[in-house]
Length: 289
Image 1 (spheres, rainbow, N blue to C red):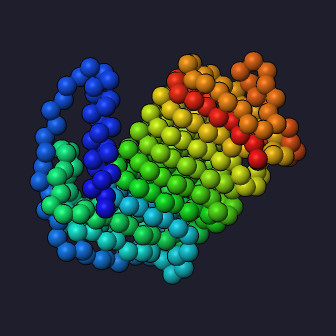
Image 2 (tube, rainbow, N blue to C red):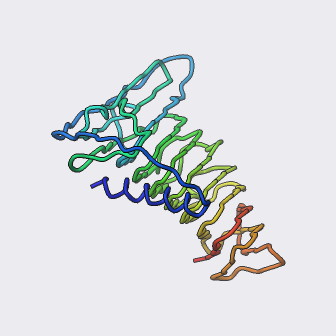
C-alpha cells in the first residue's frame, strides 16, 4: 500500500541531504493502524452573497482521487482510512468550504504497524468554484473536465499526480497555479482548462505538460523548474511560441518546431500559446503531435 511511498519519500530526503553534505537525524514515530473505516463525505450547495464556492482540500499522505459528476451536492464521495487520526474534518460556512485530513501529525518519519490506508474519492459538481489543493506525499488522480473552475491552486510535496481536463472548463480559469517538489506530475489536455495565464513551479522532478484540447483564447504559461525532466507537448496546428532560459539543461525537439536562438516556434492557426521556460539543469523536451 502507501507505506512504500513513505519509504520513497524518506529516500528522497536522504539523497538530497547527502548531496548537500548535511547529516540529519530524523526521529521515528510508531503509528498504529486498525480496521478500515469507510465514511461518506457530502457538502451541500449553498446560498449566500457569493455564488462561487471557495473549496480547500488539505490532504496529508495517501491517495486523493477527484472527478466530475456530483449532482445533488457540491462535493460528494467517500473516505477510507485505518488510522484514527485520519478521520476527515469537513467545515462549511457559506461559500467557504474546507475538507481536511484528521489531526494526525506526520512531522517525524512514521513507522506503520501494518499497511497504511488513507484514500479519498470525491466527485465535484459543475457549480462555479475556486479550488485549492494542499497536499503532502500522496498519489493524486484528478479529472477536472467539465467543471466551472474560476481559480485552481495546487501545492504539494513528494507527489505522483496525473491531472486531466477531459472536457472544457465551463468558465474562464482566471488563476491557474501549480507548485510542487520532488514529484512526478503529468498534466493533460491543458488547453481545455480555458485559462489565460498559468504558472507551474517545480523542484527536482519529472514533469509533463500536455496542451492538447481546444485552445479558446491566447494563453501565457510560465514554467520554473530546477534539476528536472520537463516535457512540453503541443498539438500540431496550434500556434505556439516557447522561450527558453535553460541554464545547463539539454533541449530536445521532436516535431515541426522552428528554432531561433533559444526560442522555438510552432506554426498554426487560432489563438497563440506562449510558454516561458526557466530550467536550471536536467532536460527539456518539446514535442508536437
